[in-house]
Length: 202
Ligand code: HEM
Image (cartoon, rainbow, N blue to C red):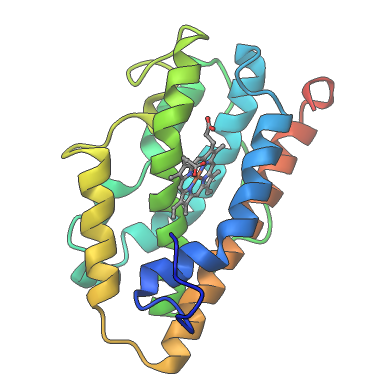
């Protein structure tokens, strides 16, 4: 998001989050592409392993009743099951959990993680088009990249409206940022882990 130079900080919380995650996002985007996930199905399967691990680590947050009070459709937004089905489509074993998953984050920190997971659905619109080139789709192998019920843009806008409308303390704002940055770091770890498990594809 563009903010005029004269503005000391973005007025909207979501804009601030976009700003602070811009660099980690660019790096992760480059890292994903460096693994050439769309060159062959086997490489795409490693990407799905990372997505599955990330989504399953976040399942506890997506199903947290306190967070659901803030975002009512939160459980339906989780893509762990779609990613698991993708793994089965791709004849890929469900990976063992990887040490270092987020545990008991504060509510605001959890929302930072969810911001990143939800935001990744926007990039998924581009990624699924490439997956189609591998013979995959939102009903086979690339389900987790599919259009969410109710629409991709709409789902994102609703989430952002809710996030921007919350009354947060300064400490909670800092926790939100912390969660978002940590989510990018974690996805990076999981991506490297997924490709390290198949060295010939790294
Ligand atoms: C785990 C987190 C994320 C991953 C792995 C991820 C991955 C990617 C990748 C690989 C692309 C490039 C697609 C292409 O060029 O074909 C992309 C694009 C995009 N992502 Fe993400 N992303 C993540 C989080 C986010 C977040 C938090 C947001 C929004 C706040 C976001 C918004 C976008 C948008 C709008 C695009 C398309 C245009 C652009 O590159 O700016 N993503 N993402």
